[in-house]
Structure formats: structure tokens, C-alpha cells
Image 1 (spheres, one colour):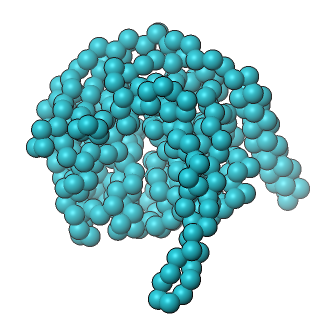
Image 2: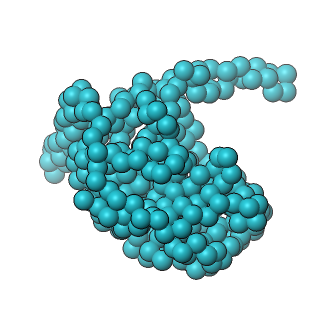
Length: 341
């Protein structure tokens, strides 16, 4: 029995290596961008007048509503697909339903629930689609993003270094039950996850997709989380470095870390539907925030790219609806109906 188990572990490890080698060959081909025939029809555009949007972040497209965090007021806000504000819940604090620093908002496609990771309070809060608080879990402050999984568990992506890739937690107790091995050799540097800054999005059919703000790698994980599909984007950037920074505290000299100043922005946002991964890419694009690269979800094959009407900071897709958030020069929320090729 032990020999069979060990052999299975070796097979899984080899599968991971083969996926990574294959992805390197794809990246080496340096595919040029080509048009992807997605046609956008405007649903609404909501430009802030200092009453509607103040500091919106963490955009999520749902089945019947659009959700975002309004960080100025520490509220979760919902909008209809015709631009009406439906409700707002929460406030700054540490009590039930209150928030401090939200670093992640994700949709549970099974239930329509919204998962918030509150770094400031060290906890995850789960809300129903009407904003009602359903439950909460304590969570380590080393996490950065969380995403519900198709089997009721949830995954956490660390953001403070440590060399780990993905932590998996029991959906009932919140206890950690698994760690997914890193799919990149860059994780040998324990500060890579801090320097790269991951994005994670759960997909309607149970997969997870992961990208990085400062690295051009893309991952698609099946519902069982193994083996991952890994590739570099068609417009790759050099992986970031972290550098040590001396800090003075209480008469002592400590060593901190920060992202090296030569790091180049890769991805602003990543989202997925049942067939496609949409990446709001920066890289060498002439107008960052407009180019959306499209990959096939099953194998991350590049399908093409399309342009948004104007630069945005983040995007989220749900079926045939695409929403986007802009911060500069003033905050704005956009929604389109998409006709896919």
C-alpha cells in the first residue's frame, strides 16, 4: 500500500513537471496578438459624481447584480445591470458584518454567495446575494486572496511570502486541509508571492484561474486542483524580484522586503466564464487597461484579443455580461452585453 501511494505521488509530481515544460514551449513561440471577434453592446456607464462611487475596488459580476467594495465607506455595494444601486451593507469596524481592509471579493458560483477576505480583521465573511451575513471564518493574515471551490471548500492565496502557492480549507470548520504545490520554480524564492501579487478567480464550472500583477504566468486549475495548466502570457514580462529593506523599530534594525523598482506590470485583472479566461493585460500594450487577452479555459490556448472602449482597472465576466471598473480621472462603472464568437 505504501509503495502504491509513493508511486502515485511520483506520478503526480511528474504530471506537474510535464505541464510546466509544455507551457514553456508555448511561451517560447511568442504568439503575436490577433483579433478576437467579441462584440460589446453597452448596458450602462455610471460615472461618479461623488455620491455614487468614491473608492470602488474588487469588482464581481453576478447572475443578477454587480458587486464591488466601496473602500471609502467600508461597504459592500450591489448594482443592477441597468445601473441602479440596489443596496449597501457594512461599515468600518471589527463587529459582525463590519470591515477594515478587504483584499479579496469572490463569487461562489454554486450558491451566489459572496466571499470577502478582511485582512484588517483577519477573517473571511460570507454574504448572501442580498448582502445578508451568513457566516465567518478566522483567517491568517498571511493570505491575500480567497476563492470558494466547487466542493464546498475554499482556497487561499498567500501574499506575504513564505514560498507556498495555494492553501485549501474545509468549508465547514475553516481548518486548513491541504496545500497545493507551487507550479513555478520561482516559488523557490520565498518572497515571490509577495513580489508577484496574485489574482485568483473561481470559474462557473469549478476551475480556478490565477494570474499575477507583476508576473505574466497564468494558471488554470481543475476542480480537483491538480494537475495545473501553466503558461506564460503571449506578451511576457520578466518575473519580479524582491529586495531587502532595513527598518528601524525600537532601537533595533530589522529587515523587510519590497518589490524591486524594475518590476514591470503584467496583469491588472483576470476573470473566467465556462469556456474562456479573460486577462486585462498591461505588458507592452500601448494603452494599459484596454487590451483583453482571451485564452481557452481547458488548456490556456491563446484565442485572440479585443479592445475595451477605454482604459479600466479591473474586469469581471458572467455569461454574456462584462463589467469594468475605472478609477481615473474619476471612478466609473461600465457594463456591456457581449456577443462571443
